[in-house]
Length: 393
Image 1 (cartoon, rainbow, N blue to C red):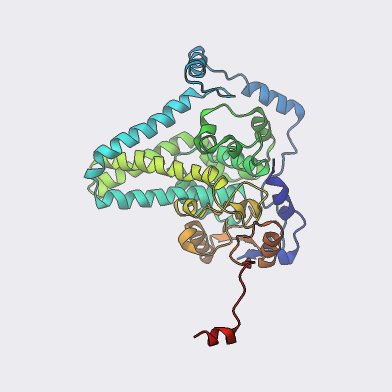
Image 2 (tube, rainbow, N blue to C red):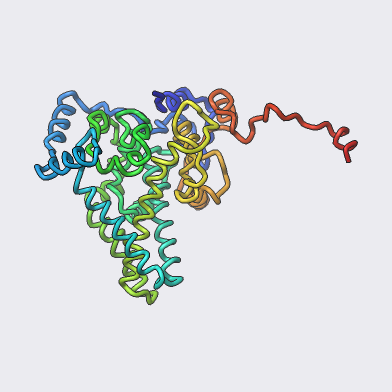
């Protein structure tokens, strides 16, 4: 089993000044090249007793008697056996949300207006930016730094996505990178597409994942006042930004019927936002080429990049997780998150944007890539000499 951590450690430690570019760098931090790009360190403050107490508290959770009986019935009659307890509450909420959305979509899609689609795309884009630019590239990987106004915007946008708290999101994603495709990985793609996509939210976490999650250092995240505010008022913020604001603004100001606004923005848009995010964990870990490191499962997936605002260039990202672009490409059409980060960089709200040097990328792909990078020579083809080409005309 290949662990992505091994490659990421190569690029995390011992970087020379010429191997890292820091855009719009502050004078104080321009030379701070090894400032824990990945945010992957273990906490030094967690003792063995703290860990044991945490695991003991976590393990108090058990399925109800009815839940255990239902899981056993599924195993006996349907042949579906699971290696962990099913979280029936999550099954009901996530499954019910998707089923209801599909049914109502086909019933009411004919009543939708231009306002429905334009507002839905706008809200979905904002929610996506909160996940990709905020939870992922800023707070998980510390690929750049953001001033307070931008951090507030990112937090509010993230609340539109309706996902877990920022603390939980960042912790799970840091574990995912450090222990990729192992039992400690929350959405280990070795367990199949469905598990990596959504199944990991429906089953009890593996004990190794629980343990590593407690050990991961989250001190930098907890030190941010914006995260502190988000944690304190998480549920209220989620309700307001995920359900109330997206539904009420089109109804109050754009003349949209409330029922249609609710269906489009609190159901359809919400479901699409969730699945576009989950595709990065599933499809981008299974389908695609590996021009930067053929030893790991994450792959380059253009389709995922389009719907996930640039997060599908996943082979590159797992090799250089501290690159603020999360991709080598500079084409904004398949990396909208980078477009917005560059915009905020120009007005000074984003700074210390980190990216590897072109030489470091070239040396890495030549050593570990699968030969599919656009700069890789095609071995069985030879250039036709100019004079030969002229003769053939």
